[in-house]
Image 1: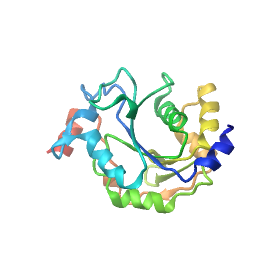
Image 2: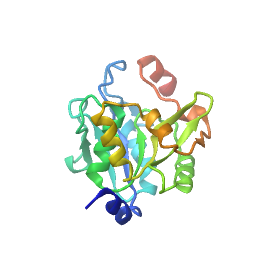
Image 3: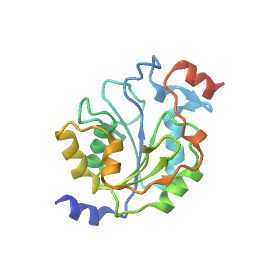
Image 4: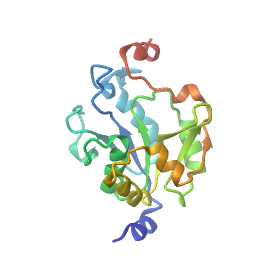
Length: 198
């Protein structure tokens, strides 16, 4: 089945993805496994997605960390050295349906932000994401990615053009204003984590 037919067939389904991280070199240990509100971060982020999705998955590089979850809900990156773009493409190809995704290192995201995403979803675009006008950049890992993105991402990776920002700009993805900059902050170092964890 070609991508266009697959998109039409599956556009109603929405699966959830928590990106559970790369190698966390600056952090020194897997960010997904850090405790936040008495549970691992990846489970906290998953709990936010559950009300909005049919099924939940976790995505990461096979060598980066080991989650205590059933292998059936883990999607390993199929594209080495392709960064977040490879992760998104791996997920879309695996589930063959649109995905609502969150990274594990943005613990201040809340259900209000996810509701806003779902309500503003435009299935005619490759994704629905927020845009930070103060930083002149999209937030590509907090959003809904459609099946129609598969071909575009495959083409970009084949040419080693790995900037998601350029992909979104070139495809004129709508710039939904970021509702609250503080809630979109992530962390990468133990010092950053101390501001989250207190």
